[in-house]
Length: 135
Image (cartoon, rainbow, N blue to C red; front, side):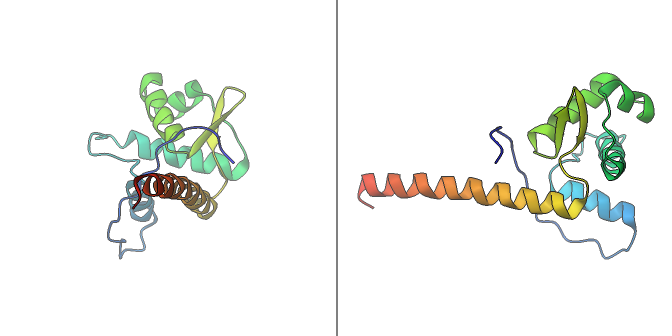
């Protein structure tokens, strides 16, 4: 079980009808609240794809390596990495970064489990408050 605090965002969006893999990846990331309107150059999307490819082979990246590979500033990469860590999608190992799991299905399953645990804690506290208020 994870002990870190993180923010899970789910945006209920219409699923793309196209079979285009890039559109589906964009939809998935947008549905997870990863790719905002301010990300004009799609740097977070590009970073996510790079980490997805790396996870497939178990490769860990430093922020400097990611910045060089994606032709982004290290500051931009670190900003997006921090957001991905806060979302529970990226983890650090030995000062390097990798997706939490090595495929997207497993990622969604783990996020679902995280949300279920968070909802269970909320429900426990709500029941306690209701009991104390006599509701």
